[in-house]
Image (spheres, rainbow, N blue to C red):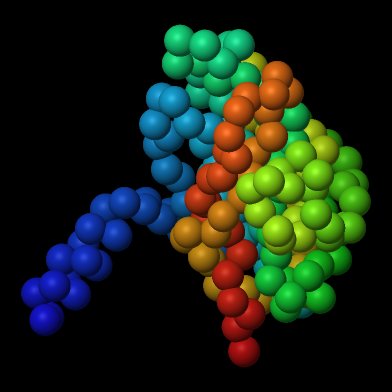
Length: 174
């Protein structure tokens, strides 16, 4: 049993690379045919916690021959505790200049056939291979859920639900 647990730990450790630049910094290399959602940092400022991600299209194109269409928006479900702790949501094309995003948590009609959950919708997608930055500020500390689910909507109507797992907001601490 101990050998199985040790093997699982080693496998998961090699799957995720964690750096100590901030509280958490997870970088994963995407498969060529998938978008990359990376948790850049979780930082604490006073009693607030700022989570920052990038969304990147590693192979931009029209969706044919292994290319990926630009993303039109990104949807992230939040737990009830994270919704209650949500202070702000923002997006940026450069990680410096931020634009406020709606804090409305509701169903996104563009993914209604994929899920029945409410989501925080970021209305900025990608352009080419340039990363787009997203961040949320919470007034409580949360763990990282390495297998949080989100949905990506492409601008060209790519078929399918485009569900993606990423390092997202987990359970409330304390």
